[in-house]
Image (tube, rainbow, N blue to C red; front, side, top):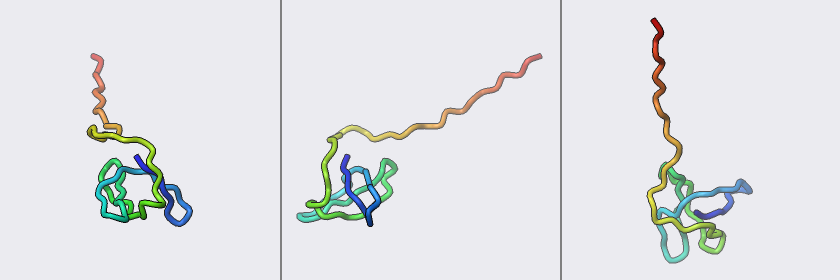
Length: 65
Protein backbone atom coordinates (compact mmCIF):
# COMPACT_ATOMS: atom_id res chain seq x y z
CA UNK A 1 0.00 0.00 0.00
CA UNK A 2 1.27 3.44 -0.83
CA UNK A 3 0.12 6.98 -0.09
CA UNK A 4 0.43 10.03 -2.33
CA UNK A 5 -1.65 13.07 -3.35
CA UNK A 6 -3.34 14.27 -6.54
CA UNK A 7 -4.02 17.98 -6.51
CA UNK A 8 -4.00 17.96 -2.69
CA UNK A 9 -6.42 14.97 -2.57
CA UNK A 10 -4.96 11.99 -0.69
CA UNK A 11 -4.66 8.76 -2.66
CA UNK A 12 -4.00 5.30 -1.24
CA UNK A 13 -3.57 2.29 -3.43
CA UNK A 14 -1.36 -0.54 -4.59
CA UNK A 15 1.56 -0.43 -6.99
CA UNK A 16 0.39 -2.01 -10.24
CA UNK A 17 3.48 -1.22 -12.30
CA UNK A 18 6.73 0.69 -12.20
CA UNK A 19 9.41 2.29 -14.32
CA UNK A 20 12.75 3.72 -13.33
CA UNK A 21 11.21 6.99 -12.11
CA UNK A 22 7.45 6.37 -11.71
CA UNK A 23 4.96 3.92 -10.24
CA UNK A 24 1.43 3.20 -11.43
CA UNK A 25 -1.09 3.14 -8.59
CA UNK A 26 -4.38 1.20 -8.61
CA UNK A 27 -7.13 0.66 -6.07
CA UNK A 28 -8.24 -2.76 -4.76
CA UNK A 29 -10.41 -3.27 -7.87
CA UNK A 30 -7.39 -2.61 -10.14
CA UNK A 31 -8.81 0.70 -11.33
CA UNK A 32 -5.82 2.85 -12.17
CA UNK A 33 -5.51 5.99 -10.05
CA UNK A 34 -2.55 7.41 -11.98
CA UNK A 35 1.21 7.44 -12.35
CA UNK A 36 3.33 9.14 -9.73
CA UNK A 37 6.95 10.05 -9.24
CA UNK A 38 8.75 7.64 -6.93
CA UNK A 39 9.96 10.63 -4.92
CA UNK A 40 6.34 11.69 -4.14
CA UNK A 41 5.06 8.26 -3.08
CA UNK A 42 5.22 7.02 0.51
CA UNK A 43 5.39 3.27 1.06
CA UNK A 44 2.96 2.15 3.81
CA UNK A 45 2.65 -1.63 3.65
CA UNK A 46 3.88 -4.56 1.56
CA UNK A 47 1.48 -7.27 0.46
CA UNK A 48 2.07 -10.24 -1.82
CA UNK A 49 -1.37 -11.67 -1.11
CA UNK A 50 -4.58 -11.39 -3.08
CA UNK A 51 -6.29 -8.07 -2.37
CA UNK A 52 -10.01 -8.51 -1.70
CA UNK A 53 -12.57 -5.91 -0.70
CA UNK A 54 -15.81 -6.66 1.12
CA UNK A 55 -18.18 -8.99 -0.68
CA UNK A 56 -21.95 -8.96 -0.85
CA UNK A 57 -23.57 -12.07 0.57
CA UNK A 58 -27.12 -12.86 -0.57
CA UNK A 59 -29.62 -12.89 2.26
CA UNK A 60 -32.27 -15.61 2.34
CA UNK A 61 -35.62 -14.70 3.82
CA UNK A 62 -37.51 -17.69 5.08
CA UNK A 63 -41.28 -17.62 4.78
CA UNK A 64 -43.40 -18.59 7.75
CA UNK A 65 -46.47 -20.75 7.24
